[in-house]
Image 1 (cartoon, rainbow, N blue to C red):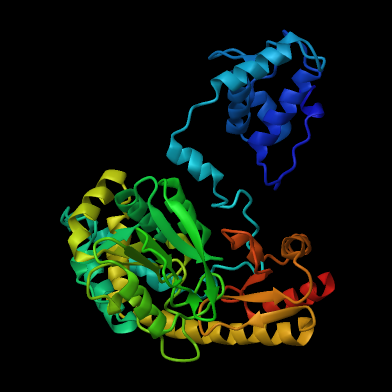
Image 2 (cartoon, rainbow, N blue to C red; image 1 turned 30 degrees about the vertical axis):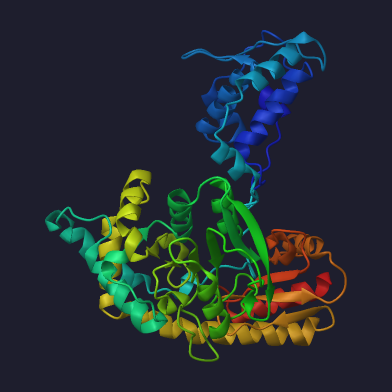
Length: 476
């Protein structure tokens, strides 16, 4: 019985299809499934292994493409190579697999080289960074907005992909809360903030263009620009965030997170923001300001967005609702300089980065009726207390090992290692113990000089943070 020879591990990061394909390939290559052997049907093997039929079907199709199996519609697959760990059959199958490997575009090849998205997604456990607390979101209110949007859908005019009602509500909110100067017509509603970066790269970046990003910084930005053929250079940080080096030539594009630098949380001063604007050439150098968690300021009034200081139309402003509301919403936005609005609207439609009008209308109502601001006021208080709880706990229990850098806002903080540079090893130990974090060195574009842990606090209640701190203490 073939299923007795196959051991699949649920929850393994490789996935069931990859595991099953590998196990069957090994059985054939070692001769345990000899040439001419007829395998069970996909339905039978799926039942025996307790997996979906699609899992088995995909594995059979992959092995057929590699030359290990002959498969045709309505017939059970047959082993086509002579295994035993040697012989021409296995080598022929490997040769077929190599020759069948698809040729990728330069864009796809460059994207594969980037360490983003992460090949292994850590489980959603304390203290995983980058998330707000979905449990605190008013789902009942949001559900009513969705229902009303659905009811009105039949009478809704088929119009712009960027719904005017949401763009107007968002323009007003950004003007009053973040100092952004933009009309509703400058706002594109997109499936995510990452979609905004991809769109910017597609429209503005030509192979060989110079792009400067923060180092350490957000890896999704470097990946998007590198995939478009840009020469991406990391710029070191100081206490005010990204530094402008005297005498440096202005690049084609600069990406920054000035309100809460990702990942350190540092705030760029007004003087530094003005310096970047002054050094950028209007119409030649573009600045992308990612305000990914700009809603969350705790210790003082927020510094207005860099975009609001720009008088020459050279700053793109990127935002997302996934941090302030819920990550399942998958909705972001992009404020485009006036001279480029028409071009970006065409590109948005051509690439298909279009958000559901149903969701957009529901969100417009959610904002207009005051629910969005009420939710923000409530979670700001919660996240502020959680930040302080984590920072105090790190000092009390792990002060000899870690130094916490407490940001003025945001949803995560950096705790630097006082001894050694093994932050990746520390992350591995912590994940195995049930505390999820990320190594600061893994966010470096060049050789890392910073070593520590990126810890999320917004998504976790104080009791969960305390339990995580106890686990961390036992790991150091």
